[in-house]
Image 1: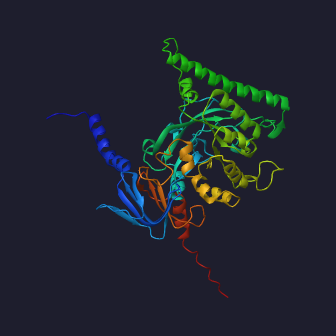
Image 2 (image 1 turned 60 degrees about the horizontal axis):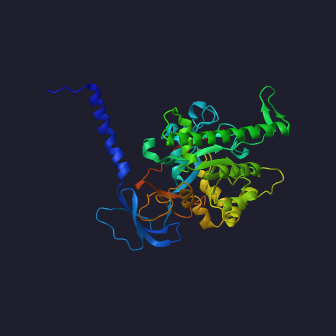
Image 3 (image 1 turned 90 degrees about the vertical axis):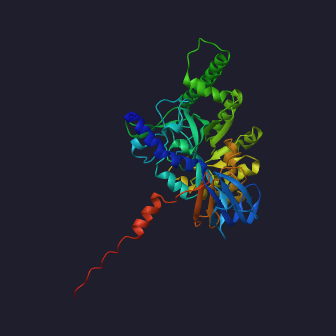
Length: 452
């Protein structure tokens, strides 16, 4: 009798255990969503239409679709079908509880980490992912952070290169199952001029002279210049076949940005920072995507001229400066759209990713056309991130990331009834729903008997 090593038996056991789950997740089944109003986001709205799904992709869309035998049918009469929404810049999978450092892996030590990838730190079992998914978010760009400076404070103090962002489906046992693009973009946090800083010795804010703050800013920009120039020289040496260059992972990965293979998402908010980032990326020939863009209305002509898209953040917030109009955050998306800037929306967070459609809805109330708002969380981000051939709209051949709703997904009272990710219906259970059920069914407290 042939003997098999114990380790081999273990490997075979785990291979058999996980193979069926992986196959089902990758291949999907055959489904048809029938009788719904289908919003393709490409200009067509199909009444009482059908979406046929096979092998994880959309096979056919229309009002007269023949269903093969064995197709599982979802009756969506009176309902609506939309492409799944995308949070175009989030921390989903990288952070769980902000106050517990062991659950946060969104940034690393050091300012310059172009070789690091969010992919390696993503936790597929995060409780935030099912919550976002249940509200119609089917995929996201999960991005590392610089660790310093708030999102609306600018790129983050002295700036830096936190690493590479990963584009994910919000369903899967492992990050490999969730992966759309392991390396979708390089993130660059643009430095800001900061004259106020927190002094931990006195636990109070302290003021620095502007000239000193400006000098630090110029040094930070010079550091970014040095990194990009070094990456160019490194790539030139490697391409020339030099055997005298030691391998440098940081410059190797940054080289994918300088040669145009990978876009760079520059996080910048104030006018000076955006202008600095525009000049920097143009000088080095980089494919730039602006993230944040609080003051983007002040440079919209330059953004249009260079065809630079903007990933906008929260709309439901206070103005950044005391002299700004009260509706400044709400009107920004409409102004950029009217000027011809391609926009997308993002939460730049994790626990708040589910609120994405409501942020967008607020912009609609202040001038952004509803069709443009829907595109900004479906097709536009797919185009910006270079995956519009696979995602973003309801068309044959595209990955079946879809949502079935009882109304407009931007309306807070709308219910998401079905979510398809990679052509498979996903469970909409999540921690929020479980807690709601738990406390809704809490036993009533007995009323005390009062004896007179």
